[in-house]
Image (cartoon, rainbow, N blue to C red; front, side, top):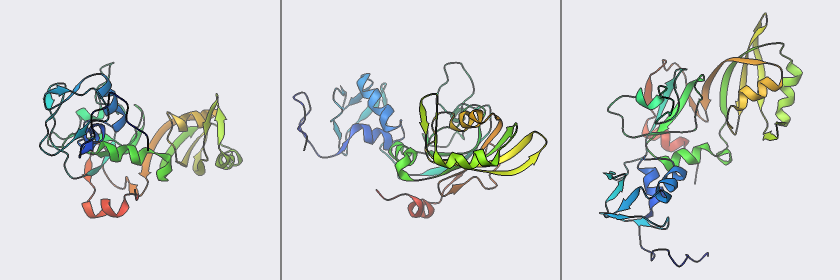
Length: 249
């Protein structure tokens, strides 16, 4: 067991504050830890100065002076993200964001992974930041499946070779499942499945094959499907389904 540093607060019962903030939907656990280092979190009116700080029942937690409600039960929603929206709570360039378009009565939520500005389709949202982080990890084993429209000469042999993984500009991409669904002239629709979801992974992989990506739609994330959810619509996953589908910890 690793001993706590000399500046760590004494052990107490409760939950580490970063995890508590993540479960409260304030931010992912990683971002919650950043809030702590920036001195933006207080516990019972005292600024939190060490990540090994625990929250117990009855404690008052504030972020930027705002009291944070105790975490609710874990909830998950399917959202059909249209293109043209950023998957961020605030965009420095002032572009519209997913979170600005959500219903006003929705609790504070974070996204499970992201879709870039011009990508669309299934985006999972949860009020539990710790869950979001867990579902993003490749070790969870969940495939992210996409319909991809490309422009160019599609080689089915090259698509098949993606199952070996590849390196582009020094970045290693794991095995990718890709198949040709239809072709019309110089345009084609593919189904592509990935495990990791690195930044702009599919677009970069397609470009390495000489293909331009003209549309990118996520249709599944693990067991959850886009289905017939309309653009801009949101639907909560029933609690029983959520319990059945969540990976074991």
